[in-house]
Image (cartoon, rainbow, N blue to C red; front, side):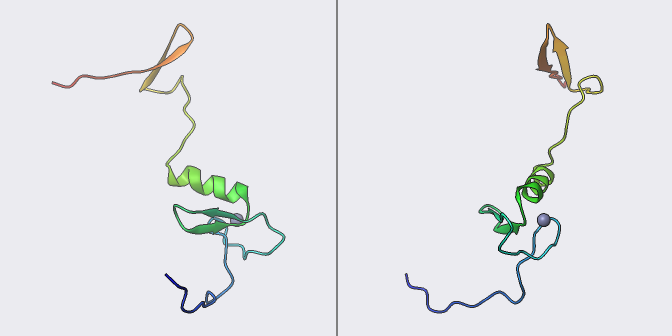
Length: 80
Ligand SMILES: [Zn+2]
């Protein structure tokens, strides 16, 4: 396959997370999965955590996990 023509994007690229225009002094991150650019690893990380619906678990508030002998277990419920 050959590249037939190359066009520039309509406007300057912006960070997918914070919307800042990307500049050459930034440590630009790229997500190959999402095809999105970020102004740095901090914005990329925030986006990835949000994308993956990632959250901190507080064991004393969790209804799904329990601590037994200093190790963490998932509670499995059986439905009938
Ligand atoms: Zn950003």
